[in-house]
Amino acid sequence: MLVADYDIVFQEVPDETTLALNISDCPHHCPGCHSAYLWQPVGDELKEEWLESMLKRYPYLTCVSIQGGDRDYHEVERVAEWVHKHGVKTCWYTGFRSLPSDLKLEHFDFVKVGPYIEALGGLKSKTTNQRFYRVTKSDDAGSSTAVYTLHDITSVFWK
Image (cartoon, rainbow, N blue to C red; front, side, top):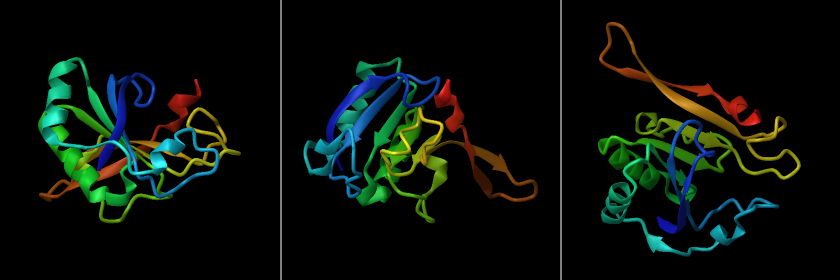
């Protein structure tokens, strides 16, 4: 995965101070996209050493959001797992219409799903097709398997 750029943000993940990693080589090419520069494979390879240095540089971060990475969602998963092991929440912004069936939700605290459709607007629009979910874990009584559930919290962006 190539990181084109990054920023410290406060609105992409509600109530979190987030390191947003803009991943390039987006396969979706949504008309009206505000980040069309991310359609091309530009930037530097995302390496754990760099990510670790960012977490040390910004110790107040509570979340890392991977903005894109849809060409290799297993790599997104791997990075999210690594971030979780460092005690930081994770989020994935994907342009997929639905999450891949084999995505391991245990590596994520939040996911945003849906391509950008200009006529419907982004997350701040009540007409948006995009959905923002909090991932919650519940232990199934009598089972050793945890169940991960998506809770739609898109409406928090409408305030």
